[in-house]
Length: 210
Figure 1 (cartoon, rainbow, N blue to C red):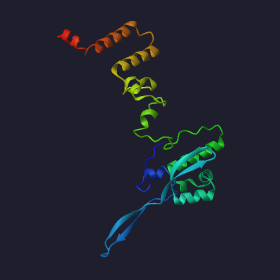
Figure 2: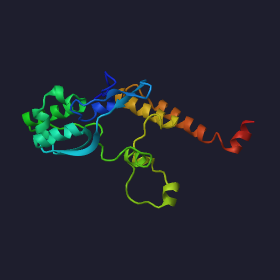
Figure 3: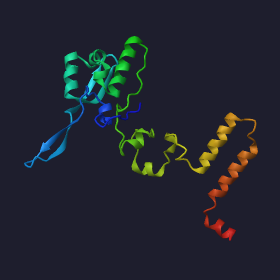
Figure 4: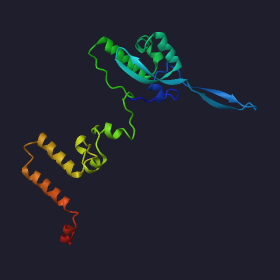
């Protein structure tokens, strides 16, 4: 779901929250000589956690005080999304939540997809290493972490693989897609090239080449 914006007043933050049509405006602030400078008046917004009984989920959203009053008047977030006109909701996040609520009411088997911005853990330097690489969450001493290789606990992307791992991956894909064309010679060439590259940095091997 792309957020984007068509007008400066409806920013990305506006599209990700519930503002009930409240956008920023401008006013002229005049000094003694009656010259003026333009000042931007932004809506009063606050970040709240709203619960949906129909979707059985909590949403952490930026909402304006106008939207908060409308939600309180409607009785719940679900009632606000159902009863309010789409023109008044006027944000892509609000319309997306409204679509999910109506789909859930229409079909009880509707599975709510992941909603952007509702991840349980924010992506930071500290959390992205173990959450997004799926490292083991059990305690492990520092000396073991340094000495042992833990790459087996997560799947590497092609950008993180070495050239040997990429060659093995290509060979496995060829064996799956074209098993008749893959011969034992390909596997022998791959193994021989790995052995040559492993001993290429040994001093005795370098002296022998000279």
